[in-house]
Length: 527
Image (cartoon, rainbow, N blue to C red; front, side, top):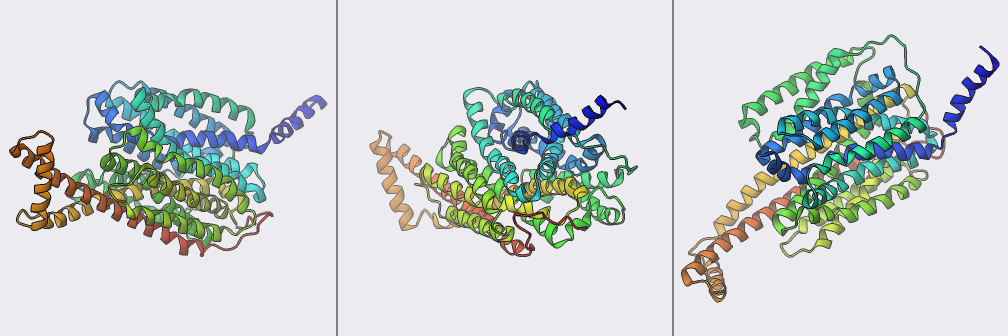
């Protein structure tokens, strides 16, 4: 090789290393933000999608399910694929497919085509976020990872908040198509920046074969589980043969997966990592955090739309002040993570999240916008205190060749936890609303004194508005029934927030299981 060729060979990696890691962090966080945004942006647009494509709202909800299922299926394979094809090449391929499939979703001509493109979008998105975390972990020295993960955590916390706000505004003022088309220019810009800024990792030629059986078992377990969790309430759970079939597939795949993966020398999912005190506790905390984050993001807009008459735009705006608080807290937590042990930050964050959920158990029919906005702001104080330290703590003690798999497992935990949280909240809401409605109906007895007094007062009111006495009485009876139904709905939401409070509290003892790590220095990469 000539001297000039040697100089070029040496200067290339040096130039790559000279790139400011914070630029890399911003770009990969932007890509992650776009992917996580799409987990919630379509939720408030479902009735617009149903109307635009001429299908029922129940059928349109498959737009959410297909994305979550394909996301769950691919996430565990990202470690192998990133090593085989190179982390940068794989990331760019996923981002390119995500951008193209997003545009195709925006121009979908019927429900079937939209679901196909959402599957493609989910597969691509599922590969992006774990690799983004790995790029961050390797771009920063261990002492600065907390700050880097603060920027990444910004995408994790703020994107689900922005999703309903942006989706509601676009659907109300433009069209549901723009919920997907908006990813086109952002995706192209991000691809260009990643191509320039991120250096490629060498492909590993170790001769390790892809664990096909393990992938099929993990994909069947997580994919079928996502279907059960997302469709269970709609399909009447185990009263449906459809749900029973998918639950059986998930359970069987799980039972077969454990001995298979535990006995492989190079498993797709290293179950030994999940059995460790540090990573196993981190995994469970991420499950609980995903449950609280996604459940509150979905059910708070639903609550204000159903019981307080908010539009889709205003329902999304309820979450927006929390996004601003989360942005500030991310950088504060990034600084705190250099001085305070992760276990203490996580415990404090989980307690604040629980306090936020407790505040929401005091909902009444006369609450204003700022009650809900302040509750979300308090939650947004707690979530960063959990998310950033848990990402930093989970990598402690892991060898470098396990960072990709750790990222994939943490994202699987967040996504699966989110689905579990939404499913749990949906189930509590449906059953407790029926319970409260039956209990309130016992009190609304036509022969009761309070009922008769209320009926008389409301009859006079409607009569004073110009209705005949017969019409006024019918309107009064309907009004009483409506009030009972609204009270039942509010009480059911109270039960949902009690449940999410308990989930938040469960993360506190798990946090104290984490060992102390070395702050402000190199993290041990033990085997």
